[in-house]
Image (cartoon, rainbow, N blue to C red):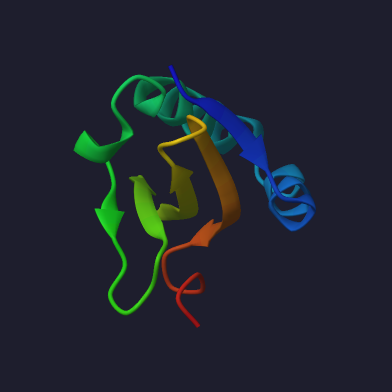
Length: 82
């Protein structure tokens, strides 16, 4: 099972969300702990992956050797890719 870690900026971004969005993000992260590659998509021209949670996107770095999922950034889909 993978361990979920957050960058400091991702923690700050998560604090700004409403409680319902935080719960959705939490349940999505719990779901991908076992087999993350079946739920994420690789970003073009990047080493990172994205996870869709409703209208929000999480940018992830997945390290399969150490079983770590690092949440790099999260935000609304209209702002996250800028």
